[in-house]
Image 1 (spheres, each protein chain N blue to C red):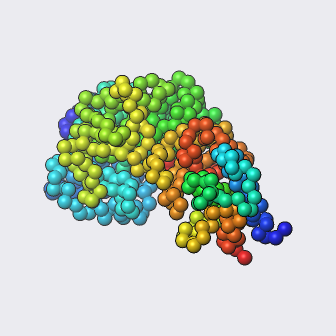
Image 2 (cartoon, rainbow over the protein chains, first blue to last red):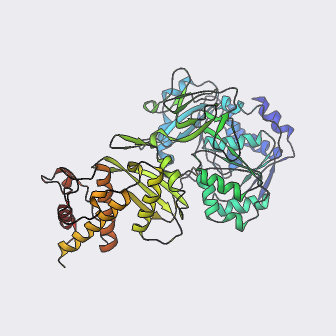
Length: 419
Length: 98
């Protein structure tokens, strides 16, 4: 891993990050790595919890762990204590560690059961994917934390390009707006849910965001209407889609056009295929395995079923159409909630929408929706307007039977919409 | 108007609105005796789910109480509460807090 140090040393006095009122050069960042290395145990491979005061210290510790061939377990202090406890329990014992050569990285995603789903990466392989990153002069906002594959991707892409990470004081639309304005951020990676919050909170009106040149979105499917609103609000910015999973690491993709949700996979190291509309990936940075083996969904040949439903435009371009796990089964007929959301968002006055299933003794499940709107209408009026609107676009059985008007759609610690 | 009549009127209104929304011609002019679901009833299971949700919402809007008409009791009843306007009104009344 000597390339990591060589690269960072070459960037010496360039600015690596702005965080908590401080500016760090790449020399400062290397010093943080050195300090972290001193504090690591020598000898046998150990699981090292990474919970640092600043994101940059956390990143430095992670890179020190790669060099020292330990196993990193990022547990940012923002995580609730109970969640950390469950993660520690899952990470404490697993036969998968026997398969690890070199350094490891443990990441978690929410499992289908109560227990978080733990995954083990070969950390060195993951980091090596950034070896040939070319020099750039970006100022990139870091929204996700270092326990998330998207957060690590943003950070590594930026740092191994000699660019500057801008870490906001808090992960709120207001704090992000402030950070963009004061540090002239030009790359803003975020989830569609966060972009929606940014627009709903009128941040582009309160702060000067004219420095933004690239809006990079990913982690969940992007509604076409939101993409249009972003393009209108940021007329000079390019809209780029990102894609990755905790299991495969980030893969390189290219949006076909700024206003299109279709992308092509431009990653020579990645193979892909579609089975029953689900995207399968084979990447060098795939996890070694799950810590709790019963949760596995990995093919022995190195393939991983992403759980993402895709549509193919027949020219090799793909569009994320939803999650296999979100499919709603109503009396034996199956529907993707995203299809209904894309219709509902076009209804006048609807600012944000979430479609989900509820248990129903008559049909097994029924379809419900939550909408956010500033319009004041009675529930029955909303329902009638919704039905009339949907009737033109959807089969009758796909029209939600229940509608609730709420103040805001919830957001989880990973900046995704709560499901 | 008796409580039963009030609830019946609410169910009739809900059926009328549902018929308009989903264009179910035979239910455009419902009355207490109108059949809804089951033998000779025009609703399919999806329309029934919608009607049940509509009546629950209407009860909640009018009386500020939350009831569930699609419960175990309704599913296992010897005579389905969903067969007609009047049986649905009875089911609502049974579930209203006294």
